[in-house]
Image 1 (cartoon, helix red, strand yellow):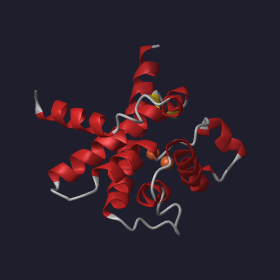
Image 2 (cartoon, helix red, strand yellow):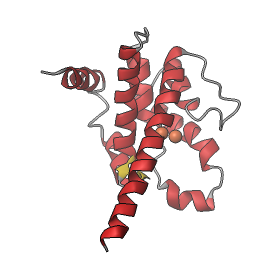
Image 3 (cartoon, rainbow, N blue to C red):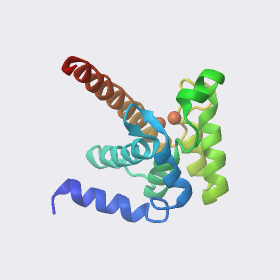
Image 4 (cartoon, rainbow, N blue to C red):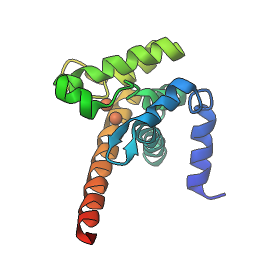
Length: 162
Ligand SMILES: [Fe+2]
Ligand SMILES: [Fe+2]
């Protein structure tokens, strides 16, 4: 088994109570960036967070890091539609995701902090104050950028073929 497969196996083991939970699976119903669903985005942020701490040899609480990363966008609505009606999506979805995570998974304070602070500096008052929160904040921004660029390239390619 290669390194990436081993990393994925470890992440899936830590998230085993979350990945197939019906409420978490609902994230598959919503698009996050183009063809990437919210579920796929959250899973990618969890994997990237894990790879970051491995590569940089950062010590972190793996459960807080990975559960926080996987549930960080569990707001459970289509933000493309709601966003037009609710211009505050960018600043309030972290709180909504956190409320859902507490309601369905009873997560601890440290994990709640990872979710609440993932939109800093857009949410200027929610400064990441733990190692896990900083990592997820960075991982989310990187994954969102890559997903957005990939999605645009895909769309441009599609238009060219027509
Ligand atoms: Fe978010
Ligand atoms: Fe996100």
